[in-house]
Structure formats: C-alpha cells, structure tokens
Amino acid sequence: MRRHAQKMHRNGLQPMVIIDRDDQFPDIAAVLVARTLWRYRSELAPLYLVTALVLSGLILHASRPHWWPHLLVLATVAAWVVAMFGDRFGLTLRVERLYGAAVVMGAGGWLAAVTALGIAFSPLPQVLAVGGFVLAVPWWVHRRRRAKVRVDRQIAAWPEIAQSIGLAGSRAQSAVVDVWGWRARFALARGQTIQDVTAKVPAIESALGTFRGAVRVFPTSDDKANRFELRVLNTDPHADAIPWPGPSGSSITEPIDLGPFEDATSARVLLLRRHGLIGGVAGSGKSGGINVLVGNLSACRDVVIWAIDLKRGMELQPWASCIDRLATTPEQARAMLRDAVTILEARAEWLTANGRRVWDPTPELPALVIVVDEYAELADDAPDAASDTDSIARRGRAVAVTLIAATQRPTQKAMGKGAVRSQMDVRVSFRVRERKDVDLILGQGMLNAGWHAHTLNAPGKFLLSAPEHDTPRRGRAYLLTDDAVSEAAQRHEALHPVLDEVSQRALDEASTPLLRPVSAASVPLRPSREDRAESVLREALNGAPDEGLPIAHLLMITKMSRPTLYRRLSELVKTGRAVQVGRGRYKASDHTP
Ligand SMILES: Nc1ncnc2c1ncn2[C@@H]1O[C@H](COP(=O)(O)OP(=O)(O)OP(=O)(O)O)[C@@H](O)[C@H]1O
Image (cartoon, rainbow, N blue to C red; front, top):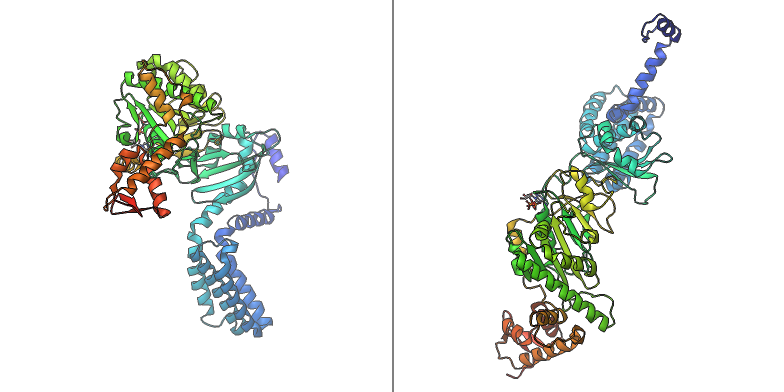
C-alpha cells in the first residue's frame, strides 16, 4: 500500500488510502474494532457481562453441572458483601450498593441455573435478555459513570492537547470526578512552570471544549513547582447567590468568613492588625462585601466600628445601631480620622508605658475598625485628611486600629497621596473592567500571575489576596438581604463594646484642650476600674428589692458596657451569688433589701 501511495505522490497526486486485496485489511479492521470495543468499554460493559455469562454457562453446564449450589451460595455471599461494604470500593451511595448487589445476585443466580439446567432451558435465555437490559439501563444513565468516562477520554487526549498548546511533555497523573466537574493532577515537563499553564487557560478551555471560564489552575497541595492541579467545572458552583449563614466568630482574633470558594471551603481572612482594600466596578458587589464584613465585625465583642460613607450613609446606615460613629459628611470624616490618630497615639503611648508591644483586643480593650465606603470620595472631598489615613495605615497595626477601604479603582489619586494602598495587607477584588485594574487592586504583577479579576462574571464573585491566600481562587461573597441586615443589626446591637478608657480619655483631652493634658500613659489599667464597677454591682444586687433590679438600672450605676454586665451577671448567677428574678431583673441570692 505504501508503494502505491508513493507512486501516486511522484505522479503529483495526493496520497490516499487504497486497500489492495492482497494488503492487510483484516488486520487493520481488527485493530479498529478492538480499539472501538476498548474505547467504549464502559458503555459496552453490560454486553461483555452477558457474553461472559453465556460462555461460562456453556462451559460449566458441560463440565461441572453439579456445581450449581456452590455458585448460588457464592453469588449470595458476594451480593451481601457488595450491599454491606460496597462503599469501600467506590459505591458511595446506598442506591449504588443495592444496584451492585442486584447485579451480582442476578448474574450469579442465572449462572447457577444455567449450570444445572443448560442454556436452552426455557425461559433462561429470555430471562438473560430482559434482565440484562433492565439492569443495564441504570448503568447507562448513571451520571457519575458517564462523567468519569468523559474525563478519562479527555485525559487520554491530553498529550495531543498539550502538544498543540505548547505544554508538550506534561502528563496527567490522576483524575477524580466531583460534584461540579472534575479535577486532575498533572506533572510538568522540565522547565515548565505553573505560570505557563495559567497563561494557557483559554487555550486549554478551547482544547477541552469546555465553556469559557470553566478551567482553573492551582498549585498542588504539596506545592511542587513541577506539578499543577487542573479543575474543570461543568456547572458553576457559584451560579446562585449564597445567603449569609450569620457571623463566623465573635472576636476579631478569629478569621472572618467572606463566602465560599468554588471547592466549598470558606474564604476566611484575619483582619486583626491588618488593613483591607476592596475594589471592583460599580455593581460588582463591593457594598455586598462590606455588608458581610460589618455583619461579622458587629458580632465581635472586641471591636468598635467607625464608618465613613460619603454617599450620605446609604450603604452603612442600616448598621447604624452597631456602628459607634458614622461620618456622612467630609467634615465628620475629617474629624473622625483625626480622632482615630489621637487614639492610636494614645494607645501607643499607653503600650510603651505599660511595657506591652501590641494592643491585644478584648471587650475592655477593643480594636477599632474604620470602614470607608467609596474611598475616592474621601480623597476628593477631604484631601486634608490624607495625612491621617496615612498615619493610620502605617502605624495602626500594633494598636489594633484597622482601616478598610472600598473603592472602584484604587489609583494613586483615588487613594490620596501617601502609603495607604501599599499598607493594605488584605485585598479583595470583585470584577474589574480592565485587565490593568487587577494590578491596581491586588498589586503589581498579579494579573500575570493569573489573578484574572476581569473574568469574574457575576456580582459578589471575588479574588482574595492575603498572607494566607496566595493563589487566585474564586470566591463568592455571601449575600445579605435588607431583612438579613436589619435583623443582624438588631441582634448585634447589644454586643458592641464601648471605647476603652485610654482612647476615650485621649479623645476627651483632645476636645477640651484648655484642661491640663493628662498623659495617656497615666490612665490606670483596666482592672482597678473593673474592680470598682464590680463592687458597685455587688452592692446594688445586695440592696435590690425583692423583684430585683432591671438591667437598665444596673448599666447606669455600674457604667459597665452591656456585654460586660451580662457576662458578670451570668458569672454571679452561675456561682450562686446572684439570681435572676423574672425577665432582665437581678438581685443577690442572699440579699438584704
Ligand atoms: N454576593 C452577592 N451574591 C449575589 N448577588 C450579589 C452579591 N453582591 C451583590 N449582588 C447583586 O449585585 C448588585 C450590586 O451589588 P453592590 O451594590 O454590592 O455593588 P457595588 O459594587 O457596591 O456597586 P456600587 O459601587 O454601585 O455601590 C446588588 O443589588 C445585588 O443584587
């Protein structure tokens, strides 16, 4: 045949396959048939099983017809094993195990019958045909099996795909099908890097025939430079809005859950001693993201929230009851930032005087978190506040004064002069319009490293960059409906602490400059004030009338914050020193009215 083709080529004709009678047609046909039988082995498996049963039945009936009771016992035991322990070999669902057991019992039972009676015994052939077909249907329609077959075929085609997209030599090591699609671990050829693969994502999507945006590339869990994990999504796990499940913690020392990543793990990020930048175009879900943050921060007993919202407080107003101070005009914002710097200086002084290095937030010594929505408006309307934001960004960490800024495009102009942007340790990028905005929000070089925030295709989808999040994984922020916001604001209202004495005293001094300034460092440590409040509380409870004293009264005379008072009361009740009399009224257990 080759001679034939060469001759045609010499004569200027295109070579084509011509099969001479004396060439090796049967061989080629056999190979093609064998290949097809192998390629479609999963779909044809029921047929193979039926064939195997017929052949075994013929042989056994001819040679060992008396074996039929053994076969029956064997089939029963095997079916029982599959039903009971099938999950150990991949039959995770109960219905899969029952199906497996039915197939084993059916096949074994039929084989035992044929062994005893012969294949022609009616109605054994009919039973095989009908039973085989009925049992084959669930196999053919099984979603996970079909997905696995598809994946196997794509993996088998990988060498060819790799060749055509410039990743020749990379090879698949393992693949698993999951609820959303499939993922596979790949080894790279010498000199190839994960960045090379990330840059080829659109080409991989095209070669695999997926929809746009379906392919993700991650480092493997062992972080080897010559490995990567490829994730292909058949359905978008973030297709629907995800309702907020409520706060993920009650202290700023715990990470805050912004929403799930695509693999359903939580995008948790710590905000203690860090500043945050949130960016994205209008409508990309920034305000939604801020709602999740404030929802969590307001549940923290050790956080005082201040907020600046120059869009007349539209976004943050619903949280007003949990926000200690809300600035909606440039003047208020200016004053607030000035006060924040006063606080950070007083705290720094107090730390030095008390031999401490950092401010560890507690309900009595809370962190201060300043949330600024539309930061660009602040830079425009209150440019003179820039030096204060700069101070907070540079010096706020140790004293637990945190700045969280949201803006569409954090250009140097929008961020005001100074170092604010470069001090942001946590970056959340919702969708951006232009590719170059990725670097603006997430940092130089992030676009090239695969942080493709311009491809995020629904509001609330985000990329999170933080010390503990250094690979581009898509998350979707929880969605808080208006009702959820007002409900959470109401629930958290009682939790928020008041500013500590060190900060409060510094603010008082700053606002009454005629008084002789008292150094912040000379403000006594908390315990003595607490002791005082505690003894006032005890005395009040001892002298309470029979029907007890209401919370409001106790708050007023002890000057404790509401959470502190509740905690003290519950401790006293637990240790038997106080009793609750009716709703919200307390007295000492051995009181003398
Ligand atoms: N996490 C989310 N899940 C689902 N939908 C969301 C989510 N976040 C926002 N949306 C939808 O997108 C719309 C716009 O969101 P949002 O107001 O938060 O955007 P924004 O970026 O703050 O816009 P702007 O800059 O104009 O305030 C919302 O009305 C809401 O319907």
